Length: 433
Image (cartoon, one colour):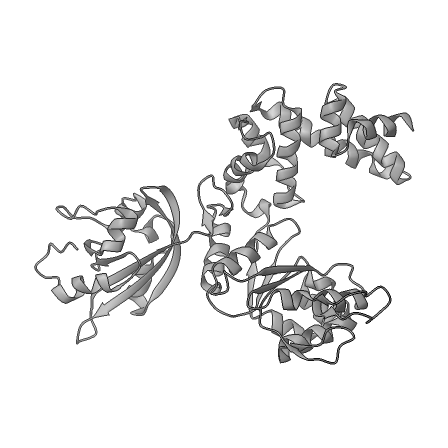
Protein backbone atom coordinates (compact mmCIF):
# COMPACT_ATOMS: atom_id res chain seq x y z
CA UNK A 1 0.00 0.00 0.00
CA UNK A 2 1.31 3.43 -0.95
CA UNK A 3 -0.17 6.72 0.22
CA UNK A 4 1.84 9.88 -0.35
CA UNK A 5 -0.52 12.83 0.01
CA UNK A 6 -1.49 14.14 3.40
CA UNK A 7 -4.97 14.96 2.10
CA UNK A 8 -5.76 11.33 1.35
CA UNK A 9 -7.92 9.79 4.08
CA UNK A 10 -5.97 6.87 5.50
CA UNK A 11 -9.09 4.72 5.80
CA UNK A 12 -9.78 5.04 2.05
CA UNK A 13 -6.25 3.96 1.25
CA UNK A 14 -6.42 1.02 3.65
CA UNK A 15 -9.81 0.07 2.21
CA UNK A 16 -8.21 -0.89 -1.11
CA UNK A 17 -6.76 -4.08 0.35
CA UNK A 18 -10.31 -5.15 1.11
CA UNK A 19 -10.79 -5.74 -2.63
CA UNK A 20 -9.62 -9.09 -3.99
CA UNK A 21 -9.05 -7.64 -7.45
CA UNK A 22 -6.42 -5.01 -8.35
CA UNK A 23 -7.52 -1.54 -7.16
CA UNK A 24 -6.18 2.00 -7.16
CA UNK A 25 -7.29 5.25 -5.55
CA UNK A 26 -7.53 8.14 -8.01
CA UNK A 27 -8.20 11.87 -7.62
CA UNK A 28 -10.65 13.78 -9.84
CA UNK A 29 -7.66 15.03 -11.87
CA UNK A 30 -6.68 11.39 -12.74
CA UNK A 31 -3.75 11.12 -10.31
CA UNK A 32 -3.11 7.73 -8.70
CA UNK A 33 -2.41 8.18 -4.98
CA UNK A 34 -2.66 4.60 -3.69
CA UNK A 35 -2.75 1.00 -4.89
CA UNK A 36 -3.49 -2.32 -3.21
CA UNK A 37 -1.33 -5.41 -3.02
CA UNK A 38 -3.29 -7.20 -5.74
CA UNK A 39 -2.61 -4.33 -8.15
CA UNK A 40 1.12 -4.54 -7.47
CA UNK A 41 1.07 -8.30 -8.06
CA UNK A 42 -0.85 -8.02 -11.35
CA UNK A 43 0.43 -4.81 -12.88
CA UNK A 44 3.56 -3.93 -10.93
CA UNK A 45 4.41 -1.16 -8.48
CA UNK A 46 3.32 2.38 -9.33
CA UNK A 47 6.03 4.97 -8.69
CA UNK A 48 4.22 7.52 -6.53
CA UNK A 49 7.24 9.64 -5.73
CA UNK A 50 6.15 11.82 -8.68
CA UNK A 51 2.65 12.47 -10.04
CA UNK A 52 1.33 9.25 -11.67
CA UNK A 53 -1.77 9.56 -13.82
CA UNK A 54 -4.03 6.59 -14.57
CA UNK A 55 -4.13 7.28 -18.32
CA UNK A 56 -0.32 7.34 -18.49
CA UNK A 57 0.21 4.25 -16.34
CA UNK A 58 -2.50 2.10 -17.95
CA UNK A 59 -2.42 3.30 -21.57
CA UNK A 60 0.78 5.32 -21.96
CA UNK A 61 -1.40 8.25 -23.07
CA UNK A 62 -0.43 11.87 -22.50
CA UNK A 63 -4.06 12.91 -22.04
CA UNK A 64 -7.13 11.31 -20.38
CA UNK A 65 -8.79 8.46 -22.27
CA UNK A 66 -11.79 10.50 -23.39
CA UNK A 67 -9.40 12.97 -25.06
CA UNK A 68 -7.55 10.10 -26.74
CA UNK A 69 -10.64 8.70 -28.46
CA UNK A 70 -11.66 6.14 -25.82
CA UNK A 71 -14.43 6.02 -23.26
CA UNK A 72 -13.24 7.16 -19.83
CA UNK A 73 -15.00 5.66 -16.80
CA UNK A 74 -13.65 8.37 -14.47
CA UNK A 75 -15.05 11.15 -16.63
CA UNK A 76 -18.37 9.28 -16.89
CA UNK A 77 -18.47 8.81 -13.10
CA UNK A 78 -17.83 12.52 -12.60
CA UNK A 79 -20.95 13.24 -14.63
CA UNK A 80 -23.21 10.52 -13.20
CA UNK A 81 -21.75 10.36 -9.66
CA UNK A 82 -22.46 6.65 -9.91
CA UNK A 83 -20.43 3.52 -10.66
CA UNK A 84 -19.31 3.30 -14.29
CA UNK A 85 -17.89 0.31 -16.11
CA UNK A 86 -15.97 -0.13 -19.38
CA UNK A 87 -13.66 -2.60 -21.12
CA UNK A 88 -10.18 -1.24 -21.85
CA UNK A 89 -6.91 -2.54 -23.25
CA UNK A 90 -4.13 -1.84 -20.73
CA UNK A 91 -0.36 -2.04 -20.92
CA UNK A 92 0.85 -4.64 -18.42
CA UNK A 93 4.13 -6.41 -17.64
CA UNK A 94 2.82 -9.21 -19.89
CA UNK A 95 2.02 -6.90 -22.78
CA UNK A 96 -1.41 -5.61 -23.75
CA UNK A 97 -4.40 -7.17 -22.00
CA UNK A 98 -8.16 -6.65 -21.89
CA UNK A 99 -9.24 -5.29 -18.52
CA UNK A 100 -12.75 -4.84 -17.14
CA UNK A 101 -12.63 -1.45 -15.37
CA UNK A 102 -15.12 -0.34 -12.70
CA UNK A 103 -14.95 3.24 -11.37
CA UNK A 104 -16.51 3.87 -7.95
CA UNK A 105 -16.94 7.55 -6.98
CA UNK A 106 -16.34 8.48 -3.32
CA UNK A 107 -18.46 11.45 -2.23
CA UNK A 108 -18.05 13.62 0.84
CA UNK A 109 -20.85 14.58 3.23
CA UNK A 110 -21.86 17.44 0.92
CA UNK A 111 -22.09 15.18 -2.12
CA UNK A 112 -18.91 16.48 -3.71
CA UNK A 113 -16.55 14.12 -5.50
CA UNK A 114 -13.44 13.48 -3.45
CA UNK A 115 -11.82 10.35 -4.86
CA UNK A 116 -12.44 7.38 -7.13
CA UNK A 117 -11.74 3.71 -6.49
CA UNK A 118 -10.79 2.03 -9.76
CA UNK A 119 -11.19 -1.75 -9.83
CA UNK A 120 -9.32 -3.58 -12.59
CA UNK A 121 -10.31 -7.15 -13.45
CA UNK A 122 -8.18 -8.85 -16.13
CA UNK A 123 -10.28 -10.48 -18.86
CA UNK A 124 -8.80 -13.87 -19.77
CA UNK A 125 -11.35 -14.93 -22.38
CA UNK A 126 -9.82 -12.63 -25.01
CA UNK A 127 -6.42 -11.27 -25.96
CA UNK A 128 -5.29 -8.17 -27.91
CA UNK A 129 -2.05 -10.01 -28.71
CA UNK A 130 -1.21 -13.09 -30.78
CA UNK A 131 -2.79 -15.69 -28.56
CA UNK A 132 -3.69 -19.30 -27.97
CA UNK A 133 -7.20 -20.66 -27.43
CA UNK A 134 -8.81 -17.39 -26.34
CA UNK A 135 -10.64 -15.04 -28.69
CA UNK A 136 -8.24 -12.60 -30.35
CA UNK A 137 -8.82 -8.98 -31.32
CA UNK A 138 -8.40 -5.34 -30.37
CA UNK A 139 -10.77 -3.47 -32.70
CA UNK A 140 -13.61 -1.36 -31.26
CA UNK A 141 -16.22 -3.78 -32.62
CA UNK A 142 -14.45 -6.76 -31.07
CA UNK A 143 -13.97 -5.00 -27.74
CA UNK A 144 -17.68 -4.12 -27.59
CA UNK A 145 -18.54 -7.78 -28.08
CA UNK A 146 -16.09 -8.86 -25.36
CA UNK A 147 -17.49 -6.22 -23.00
CA UNK A 148 -20.99 -7.64 -23.49
CA UNK A 149 -19.75 -11.20 -22.94
CA UNK A 150 -17.93 -10.11 -19.78
CA UNK A 151 -21.08 -8.47 -18.45
CA UNK A 152 -23.52 -11.29 -19.16
CA UNK A 153 -21.19 -14.24 -18.53
CA UNK A 154 -21.50 -14.38 -14.71
CA UNK A 155 -25.31 -14.10 -14.86
CA UNK A 156 -27.92 -16.74 -15.68
CA UNK A 157 -29.48 -14.70 -18.49
CA UNK A 158 -30.24 -16.43 -21.78
CA UNK A 159 -28.04 -15.08 -24.57
CA UNK A 160 -28.75 -14.79 -28.30
CA UNK A 161 -25.65 -14.48 -30.48
CA UNK A 162 -26.35 -12.70 -33.76
CA UNK A 163 -23.99 -12.52 -36.69
CA UNK A 164 -22.97 -13.87 -40.07
CA UNK A 165 -21.91 -17.48 -40.58
CA UNK A 166 -18.26 -17.99 -39.75
CA UNK A 167 -18.06 -15.01 -37.36
CA UNK A 168 -17.14 -17.20 -34.38
CA UNK A 169 -20.46 -17.75 -32.59
CA UNK A 170 -19.43 -21.05 -31.00
CA UNK A 171 -16.23 -19.49 -29.60
CA UNK A 172 -18.35 -16.67 -28.16
CA UNK A 173 -20.71 -19.21 -26.61
CA UNK A 174 -17.73 -21.04 -25.08
CA UNK A 175 -16.45 -17.71 -23.71
CA UNK A 176 -19.84 -17.04 -22.08
CA UNK A 177 -19.80 -20.50 -20.54
CA UNK A 178 -16.20 -20.11 -19.40
CA UNK A 179 -16.92 -16.84 -17.62
CA UNK A 180 -20.02 -18.20 -15.86
CA UNK A 181 -20.49 -19.98 -12.55
CA UNK A 182 -21.17 -23.10 -14.63
CA UNK A 183 -17.69 -23.17 -16.21
CA UNK A 184 -16.74 -26.44 -14.50
CA UNK A 185 -19.87 -28.16 -15.85
CA UNK A 186 -20.49 -29.44 -19.42
CA UNK A 187 -20.82 -27.23 -22.48
CA UNK A 188 -23.09 -29.04 -24.96
CA UNK A 189 -23.87 -28.01 -28.54
CA UNK A 190 -26.90 -28.93 -30.64
CA UNK A 191 -26.74 -27.98 -34.31
CA UNK A 192 -30.37 -27.21 -35.14
CA UNK A 193 -30.10 -27.12 -38.95
CA UNK A 194 -31.81 -29.95 -40.79
CA UNK A 195 -33.28 -31.74 -37.77
CA UNK A 196 -36.54 -33.61 -38.27
CA UNK A 197 -39.12 -33.57 -35.47
CA UNK A 198 -38.26 -37.09 -34.29
CA UNK A 199 -34.50 -36.50 -34.45
CA UNK A 200 -34.82 -33.16 -32.66
CA UNK A 201 -36.70 -34.75 -29.76
CA UNK A 202 -34.39 -37.73 -29.60
CA UNK A 203 -31.23 -35.61 -29.64
CA UNK A 204 -32.51 -33.05 -27.17
CA UNK A 205 -34.60 -35.13 -24.79
CA UNK A 206 -33.14 -38.60 -25.32
CA UNK A 207 -35.17 -41.80 -25.66
CA UNK A 208 -35.75 -45.12 -23.94
CA UNK A 209 -35.26 -48.58 -25.35
CA UNK A 210 -38.09 -49.54 -27.70
CA UNK A 211 -39.35 -45.98 -28.16
CA UNK A 212 -39.13 -46.41 -31.93
CA UNK A 213 -37.67 -48.76 -34.50
CA UNK A 214 -33.94 -48.93 -33.98
CA UNK A 215 -34.03 -47.71 -30.37
CA UNK A 216 -32.13 -50.70 -28.98
CA UNK A 217 -31.00 -49.01 -25.78
CA UNK A 218 -31.68 -46.05 -23.54
CA UNK A 219 -30.02 -42.88 -24.77
CA UNK A 220 -29.66 -39.75 -22.62
CA UNK A 221 -30.49 -36.49 -24.39
CA UNK A 222 -28.28 -33.45 -24.66
CA UNK A 223 -30.41 -31.77 -21.98
CA UNK A 224 -29.34 -34.43 -19.51
CA UNK A 225 -25.72 -34.27 -20.70
CA UNK A 226 -25.71 -30.50 -20.15
CA UNK A 227 -27.05 -30.80 -16.61
CA UNK A 228 -25.61 -27.98 -14.50
CA UNK A 229 -23.81 -26.51 -17.50
CA UNK A 230 -24.61 -24.66 -20.72
CA UNK A 231 -26.72 -25.76 -23.67
CA UNK A 232 -25.75 -24.07 -26.93
CA UNK A 233 -28.39 -24.19 -29.67
CA UNK A 234 -26.59 -23.24 -32.87
CA UNK A 235 -28.65 -21.85 -35.76
CA UNK A 236 -31.85 -21.78 -33.75
CA UNK A 237 -33.48 -19.87 -36.59
CA UNK A 238 -33.57 -23.17 -38.50
CA UNK A 239 -35.80 -24.92 -35.95
CA UNK A 240 -39.13 -25.64 -37.72
CA UNK A 241 -42.16 -23.83 -36.38
CA UNK A 242 -43.83 -27.05 -35.21
CA UNK A 243 -40.81 -27.90 -33.03
CA UNK A 244 -40.51 -24.47 -31.47
CA UNK A 245 -43.41 -25.07 -29.11
CA UNK A 246 -41.60 -28.07 -27.60
CA UNK A 247 -38.47 -26.01 -27.09
CA UNK A 248 -40.52 -23.21 -25.54
CA UNK A 249 -42.15 -25.67 -23.13
CA UNK A 250 -38.74 -26.91 -22.03
CA UNK A 251 -37.41 -23.39 -21.41
CA UNK A 252 -40.52 -22.23 -19.56
CA UNK A 253 -41.12 -25.27 -17.37
CA UNK A 254 -37.62 -26.70 -17.03
CA UNK A 255 -39.03 -30.21 -17.36
CA UNK A 256 -39.05 -32.77 -20.17
CA UNK A 257 -39.68 -36.44 -20.95
CA UNK A 258 -37.38 -38.70 -22.96
CA UNK A 259 -39.07 -40.04 -26.09
CA UNK A 260 -41.17 -43.10 -25.19
CA UNK A 261 -40.94 -42.48 -21.45
CA UNK A 262 -43.61 -41.48 -18.97
CA UNK A 263 -41.01 -40.24 -16.50
CA UNK A 264 -40.66 -36.49 -16.15
CA UNK A 265 -37.15 -35.12 -15.64
CA UNK A 266 -36.01 -31.69 -14.58
CA UNK A 267 -33.49 -29.74 -16.61
CA UNK A 268 -30.82 -27.47 -15.15
CA UNK A 269 -28.94 -25.56 -17.85
CA UNK A 270 -27.95 -22.09 -19.01
CA UNK A 271 -29.23 -21.38 -22.53
CA UNK A 272 -27.15 -19.77 -25.25
CA UNK A 273 -28.52 -19.60 -28.80
CA UNK A 274 -27.05 -18.40 -32.08
CA UNK A 275 -28.28 -17.61 -35.57
CA UNK A 276 -27.22 -15.79 -38.72
CA UNK A 277 -30.85 -15.04 -39.58
CA UNK A 278 -32.93 -11.98 -38.73
CA UNK A 279 -35.10 -13.63 -36.07
CA UNK A 280 -37.37 -10.62 -35.53
CA UNK A 281 -38.08 -10.48 -39.25
CA UNK A 282 -38.96 -14.19 -39.05
CA UNK A 283 -41.34 -13.36 -36.20
CA UNK A 284 -43.04 -10.76 -38.36
CA UNK A 285 -43.40 -13.35 -41.14
CA UNK A 286 -44.77 -15.79 -38.53
CA UNK A 287 -41.90 -18.20 -39.15
CA UNK A 288 -40.68 -17.94 -35.55
CA UNK A 289 -42.76 -17.84 -32.39
CA UNK A 290 -42.86 -14.46 -30.65
CA UNK A 291 -42.98 -16.02 -27.18
CA UNK A 292 -39.91 -18.15 -27.93
CA UNK A 293 -38.12 -15.11 -29.34
CA UNK A 294 -38.47 -13.25 -26.05
CA UNK A 295 -37.37 -16.32 -24.09
CA UNK A 296 -34.08 -16.72 -25.97
CA UNK A 297 -33.39 -13.01 -26.57
CA UNK A 298 -32.91 -11.83 -22.98
CA UNK A 299 -29.44 -10.51 -23.81
CA UNK A 300 -28.56 -10.21 -27.52
CA UNK A 301 -24.92 -9.87 -28.58
CA UNK A 302 -23.88 -8.84 -32.07
CA UNK A 303 -20.82 -10.67 -33.39
CA UNK A 304 -19.05 -8.37 -35.86
CA UNK A 305 -18.18 -9.79 -39.25
CA UNK A 306 -14.52 -9.87 -40.24
CA UNK A 307 -15.22 -6.99 -42.61
CA UNK A 308 -16.34 -4.96 -39.57
CA UNK A 309 -13.10 -5.65 -37.69
CA UNK A 310 -10.36 -5.71 -40.31
CA UNK A 311 -7.96 -4.13 -37.82
CA UNK A 312 -7.84 -7.58 -36.20
CA UNK A 313 -6.72 -9.48 -39.32
CA UNK A 314 -3.01 -9.29 -38.46
CA UNK A 315 -3.63 -10.70 -34.96
CA UNK A 316 -6.03 -13.34 -36.22
CA UNK A 317 -3.81 -14.47 -39.10
CA UNK A 318 -0.72 -14.85 -36.93
CA UNK A 319 -2.70 -16.70 -34.27
CA UNK A 320 -4.27 -19.04 -36.83
CA UNK A 321 -0.92 -19.90 -38.41
CA UNK A 322 0.23 -21.21 -35.04
CA UNK A 323 -2.68 -23.66 -34.99
CA UNK A 324 -2.61 -24.83 -38.62
CA UNK A 325 -0.74 -28.10 -39.04
CA UNK A 326 2.55 -27.28 -40.72
CA UNK A 327 2.04 -23.54 -40.29
CA UNK A 328 3.79 -23.11 -36.95
CA UNK A 329 7.02 -21.83 -38.51
CA UNK A 330 5.44 -19.79 -41.30
CA UNK A 331 5.51 -16.00 -41.28
CA UNK A 332 3.41 -13.44 -43.14
CA UNK A 333 5.11 -10.56 -44.91
CA UNK A 334 3.73 -7.03 -44.75
CA UNK A 335 2.61 -7.36 -48.37
CA UNK A 336 0.67 -10.53 -47.52
CA UNK A 337 -1.05 -8.78 -44.59
CA UNK A 338 -1.98 -5.82 -46.82
CA UNK A 339 -3.52 -8.18 -49.39
CA UNK A 340 -5.49 -9.97 -46.69
CA UNK A 341 -6.70 -6.62 -45.34
CA UNK A 342 -8.31 -5.54 -48.62
CA UNK A 343 -10.06 -8.84 -49.29
CA UNK A 344 -13.85 -8.99 -48.87
CA UNK A 345 -14.59 -11.87 -46.47
CA UNK A 346 -17.95 -13.42 -47.26
CA UNK A 347 -17.02 -16.40 -45.06
CA UNK A 348 -15.59 -14.33 -42.19
CA UNK A 349 -13.05 -15.93 -39.84
CA UNK A 350 -13.68 -19.35 -41.36
CA UNK A 351 -12.67 -18.00 -44.78
CA UNK A 352 -9.49 -16.41 -43.42
CA UNK A 353 -8.49 -19.73 -41.85
CA UNK A 354 -9.15 -21.47 -45.18
CA UNK A 355 -6.94 -18.99 -47.05
CA UNK A 356 -4.08 -19.45 -44.58
CA UNK A 357 -4.38 -23.25 -44.75
CA UNK A 358 -4.03 -23.02 -48.51
CA UNK A 359 -1.09 -20.66 -48.15
CA UNK A 360 0.79 -23.16 -46.00
CA UNK A 361 0.37 -25.74 -48.78
CA UNK A 362 1.18 -23.41 -51.66
CA UNK A 363 4.18 -21.61 -50.14
CA UNK A 364 7.55 -22.98 -51.29
CA UNK A 365 9.23 -21.52 -48.19
CA UNK A 366 8.04 -20.64 -44.67
CA UNK A 367 7.60 -17.05 -45.89
CA UNK A 368 4.06 -16.29 -47.08
CA UNK A 369 4.05 -13.18 -49.28
CA UNK A 370 1.35 -11.44 -51.31
CA UNK A 371 1.95 -13.69 -54.33
CA UNK A 372 1.05 -16.76 -52.29
CA UNK A 373 -2.06 -15.04 -50.90
CA UNK A 374 -3.13 -13.96 -54.39
CA UNK A 375 -2.71 -17.56 -55.62
CA UNK A 376 -4.93 -18.75 -52.76
CA UNK A 377 -7.62 -16.21 -53.63
CA UNK A 378 -7.44 -17.04 -57.35
CA UNK A 379 -8.60 -20.58 -56.64
CA UNK A 380 -11.93 -19.23 -55.38
CA UNK A 381 -12.11 -16.62 -58.12
CA UNK A 382 -11.70 -19.28 -60.80
CA UNK A 383 -14.42 -21.38 -59.24
CA UNK A 384 -16.77 -18.40 -59.03
CA UNK A 385 -16.08 -17.52 -62.64
CA UNK A 386 -16.96 -21.02 -63.78
CA UNK A 387 -20.03 -21.40 -61.59
CA UNK A 388 -22.62 -20.40 -64.18
CA UNK A 389 -21.13 -22.74 -66.76
CA UNK A 390 -21.03 -25.77 -64.45
CA UNK A 391 -23.80 -28.21 -65.21
CA UNK A 392 -23.31 -30.80 -62.47
CA UNK A 393 -21.39 -31.60 -59.31
CA UNK A 394 -18.89 -33.91 -61.02
CA UNK A 395 -17.91 -31.22 -63.53
CA UNK A 396 -17.66 -28.66 -60.74
CA UNK A 397 -15.35 -30.96 -58.77
CA UNK A 398 -13.20 -31.65 -61.84
CA UNK A 399 -12.77 -27.92 -62.54
CA UNK A 400 -11.76 -27.39 -58.93
CA UNK A 401 -9.14 -30.16 -59.00
CA UNK A 402 -7.74 -28.94 -62.31
CA UNK A 403 -7.43 -25.43 -60.90
CA UNK A 404 -5.54 -26.89 -57.95
CA UNK A 405 -3.15 -28.70 -60.25
CA UNK A 406 -2.42 -25.47 -62.10
CA UNK A 407 -1.96 -23.50 -58.87
CA UNK A 408 0.44 -26.09 -57.44
CA UNK A 409 2.47 -26.41 -60.64
CA UNK A 410 1.35 -30.01 -61.13
CA UNK A 411 2.39 -31.13 -57.63
CA UNK A 412 -0.19 -33.83 -56.90
CA UNK A 413 0.82 -34.24 -53.24
CA UNK A 414 0.21 -30.54 -52.53
CA UNK A 415 -2.98 -30.47 -54.61
CA UNK A 416 -4.38 -33.48 -52.77
CA UNK A 417 -3.51 -31.95 -49.38
CA UNK A 418 -5.22 -28.70 -50.35
CA UNK A 419 -8.33 -30.55 -51.54
CA UNK A 420 -8.43 -32.66 -48.37
CA UNK A 421 -8.27 -35.99 -50.22
CA UNK A 422 -5.66 -38.69 -50.73
CA UNK A 423 -3.28 -38.63 -53.71
CA UNK A 424 -4.88 -41.88 -54.86
CA UNK A 425 -8.33 -40.26 -54.87
CA UNK A 426 -6.93 -37.29 -56.77
CA UNK A 427 -5.48 -39.59 -59.47
CA UNK A 428 -8.77 -41.48 -59.76
CA UNK A 429 -10.92 -38.35 -60.01
CA UNK A 430 -8.70 -36.84 -62.68
CA UNK A 431 -8.53 -40.10 -64.68
CA UNK A 432 -12.32 -40.58 -64.54
CA UNK A 433 -12.66 -37.32 -66.44
